[in-house]
Length: 238
Ligand SMILES: C[S@@+](CC[C@H](N)C(=O)[O-])C[C@H]1O[C@@H](n2cnc3c(N)ncnc32)[C@H](O)[C@@H]1O
Image (cartoon, rainbow, N blue to C red; front, side, top):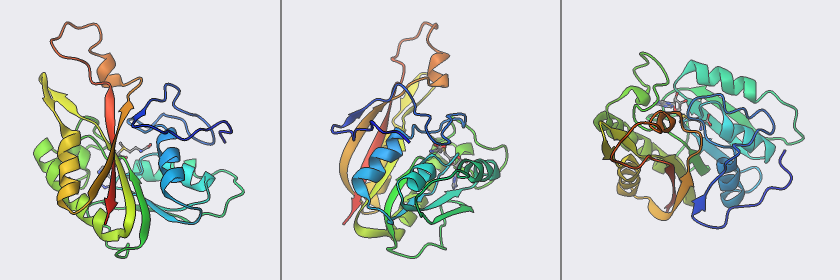
């Protein structure tokens, strides 16, 4: 476990070294640096609180929850993510977290009770910029931007339902570019969460490092700036 860890204090975050303690590896495409959930968990939760990550991927948030003695529900629609998370959670640790992982869609988390979650800490796909499966009909990384935003409305609705009042929902999303045109996906998602009733507390700009889709443009002449940031939206349910 990282011993010289310092909490972020401002709205600009940058982690040039992704972080490779415990079973974190960075191999899962589009995963987030463990510094992100570690910061959010330490700031917004206490030990034994229940966290939800409904787009768990390789389980980065769950590993951090285990290390920090928090309880967590992890959800992903893809079996590959489920298996990788299961494997990544298989390490010795002195904590006593309850960890549940489930293969289902973040659009319908019926098995989680209303007002029962202490903090949501999650990282959905950025529309179809990285496709996580070939033909899983519930995988929102296969959808056009328009359909993705409709799906995110269901995600926001479910997030609002399961979160306790006065508690935090933190979600990281980035913008995308298609045929040279910028699609401000981050702000679209932000507005969807606000429309569901969430109060916006902070927008954190996170610098992106080693982004494969950006690197491919580095030596090509273009008339736009390369995207090198993502947003972490901090919402509160009042
Ligand atoms: C950006 S990745 C999350 C990466 C994760 N933060 C990590 O560090 O490994 C997004 C995840 O959302 C999953 N996903 C796509 N559609 C979903 C849905 N409807 N419900 C739940 N998970 C979904 C994908 O399988 C993918 O693993």
